[in-house]
Image 1: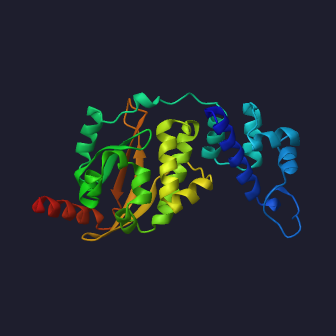
Image 2: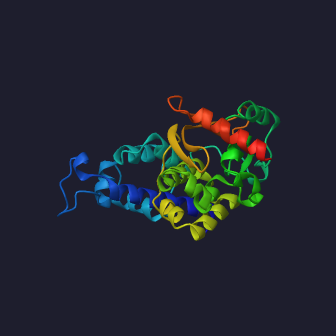
Image 3: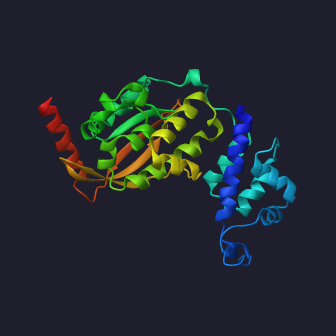
Length: 282
């Protein structure tokens, strides 16, 4: 199956899942027997102003080219979020192609290293467009030493989240954090699902992690937003943090993830003690 066919299949699966999740009452439709959730294909087509044949072809991944207007209409019918709307547009080819595989950086640019140095008292890291971690602060390493010791091929945000038992122990609600991360990843890499690096990572994770496979098959899409994170550290105790993400200037193919202490707690002091303790041991 070529790349275009795989993207059409992903689009079809996404539309089918969203169609089957829609509350009928919200669209002014009566229940179907005892079913109050989910639309028939013909209902989705009619509400979106297209023929049942055309809509069916989209769900089936047929060799079609939906217009932006068609996708916009489906987004309105299915009550898609901004991130979900953007996702189906990219699958249909309405976005500029991302950097090619051979241009994905595997080292942290100088100015990003300087930024990490300034943020060294916070847990933070820089990752490439396929979510390989290419640089991190000593505070992150103090909290999660595996980031420095894991083999480079496995130093990936998704891989570590879903396969490293130490991450599972650190995260307060590991499953929820994993679902968020998988949805963030699908949103970002939608137009690149067939890229070798991305497809290999998805295949490896699907074989290795039941949770990831479940998340991925659920086709959840959401844009990243700052969110609270609670980490249970074996030495520092509970760390109450806000998770943020930013793109280093001039490098849209990189992103930086930063955990900022909740200033209503003593997390900043706890982080400092962890780093100092590790330095003394070292």
